[in-house]
Structure formats: structure tokens, C-alpha cells
View 1: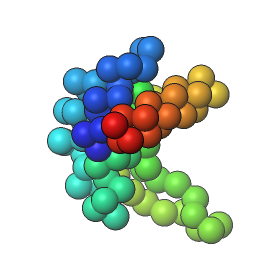
View 2 (view 1 turned 180 degrees about the vertical axis):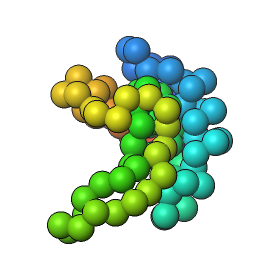
View 3 (view 1 turned 90 degrees about the vertical axis):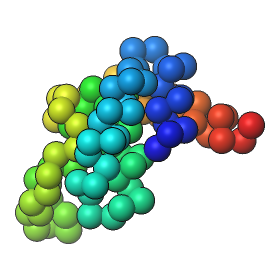
Length: 94
């Protein structure tokens, strides 16, 4: 999660402080504890709301939202998420 927060400083339009505050607030809202840190950092960095109610294997699943941004990711958001991931990969190899 912290690598993603740091990486957000190098991604155009991403917000590292928001990534940190969202991670601190929402990381425990994910069923899998290890996924909560990274998912909440990405949600905050990109201004998205992730998880929430969704369909999984054809069934509706309830779940809390992670982040407080837009709930619908656009193709541009996906590109920024890939960019954020690539920067995190570069940083983690240093």
C-alpha cells in the first residue's frame, strides 16, 4: 500500500495524500486484509470508489465501498491504474 502511495506522486493526476488517507481509513473494509491496503490506496490515488455491491459468479454480493470518489471507472482510469502499477513495480525493484 505504501509503495502505491509513493508511486502516486509520479502519476499525472493521482493524489498521494488522498491515497494515504483513504488507505488509513478504508483498508479494513475489504474481506481480504492484504487486499484492503492496496485497493484503498489505488481508490484514493485515482479518486475512485471500489468494491461495494457487485456481481460475483452470477450472484449479487454486498460489500462496503472503498474510497469516496466515482464508482464507475472509465478507460482513462484504467490507464492511470496501469501507470500507477507500473511505477509501483519500478519503485519496488529499487
